[in-house]
Length: 183
Ligand SMILES: Nc1nc2c(ncn2[C@@H]2O[C@H](COP(=O)(O)OP(=O)(O)OP(=O)(O)O)[C@@H](O)[C@H]2O)c(=O)[nH]1
Picture 1 (cartoon, rainbow, N blue to C red):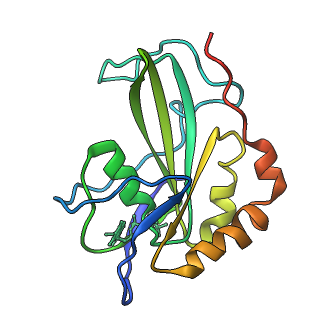
Picture 2: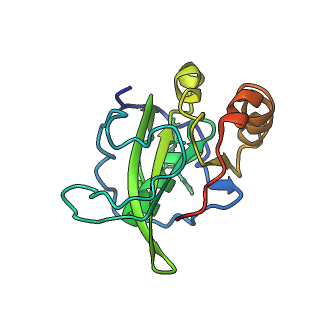
């Protein structure tokens, strides 16, 4: 599904992002252009074990040894997109909150002990109306990052109720694969 962002008013408090198990600290900085609109396509890893070949990532000419699919999950406004942009580009999306529509992903290749690790990080829409769409992408994920806003207790409770405990359900959890060792 394509992803667009639509302006959305924020309400009173500014969220601060946290994740389970970890969060990247966000800092103020210039606002980048919004992540490109993409469709799940050829770059999306197929079902099955992490890729261990060295395909090109495209115009960047980067290569990788293993690839993992990571999902960012959480209520609307907890900072999923900001976390992703911060991690990928090193900048913080300050200013108007533009809610994600559908789903998007970005790739980042890290050097881990001399190995090129490609993370394909999926940014899901937090709004309830997109839940059925975004849940379909959990199935072949290697990791989920569960995000909540530390100033909004509901966003934490919703992870427990409609996330892991309820809406995401055991089917989704069963579908999450364990990373295979790199050969
Ligand atoms: N104070 C503070 N504000 C943040 C932080 N992270 C994100 N925000 C703000 O929170 C708002 C929402 O951030 P997004 O990253 O778009 O939220 P999202 O979880 O992707 O929301 P959806 O796309 O609707 O699912 C934006 O206005 C950000 O500037 C943070 O760590 N601290």
